[in-house]
Length: 65
View 1: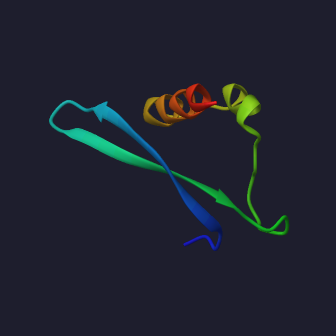
View 2: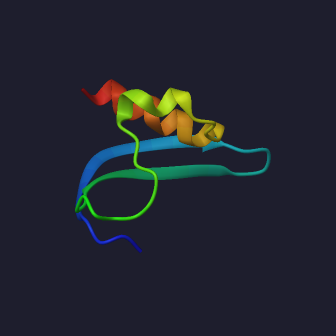
């Protein structure tokens, strides 16, 4: 739904829920500055209330670098 220059990080994050396993393929995208929404840099994510699965993805991406 978002137009971007997408690239595969080749990172898969596994999140276990009560009755199934969720395997998430993580992609990186560059967008134009004029896209609407709240955009936060990677080092600022901790300031926002994110679901556990999103926190897990953020942590895995940080460990790539």
